[in-house]
Length: 169
Image (tube, rainbow, N blue to C red; front, top):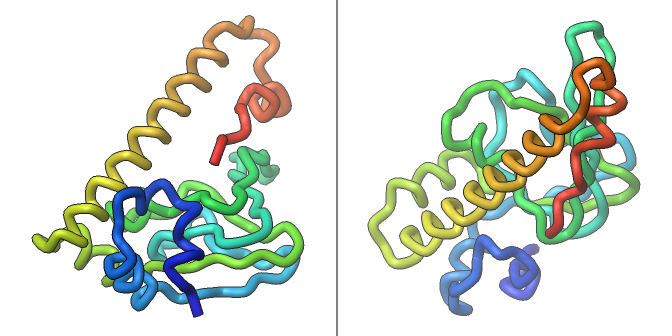
């Protein structure tokens, strides 16, 4: 079971009162993960968005040559899968548990109801989603600016992976 206290670490729920948090808890599905368990697979179209309740998750992207590049590590308080839940397109990366971890999934239907809703709870959720996406866009812009300063001949997948800062959650 997920409690309102579990959601306190998530900036997406800033400004939610106890009753609103309890409403969100009612539609979240907790998942306890083992080491190496895949939460989201690149290219798949399934699932909603996810909240990291405990542990760490590795985000990686497959490369055209069949390799893989680690992009970041997600920790408690991180939200992922928003873009896929919004546009229902293929997942851009794979997310795998590092050690024992716990996430909560907001399935696509519940996510869509909150995005389409007109209630105070839905409006607060919509604002939280906007804040989270803006934070992601700013972080991506910062990473691109860092990459742009690297000499062209030095950019490789290893360099790219090292140039991407770890997100702050």
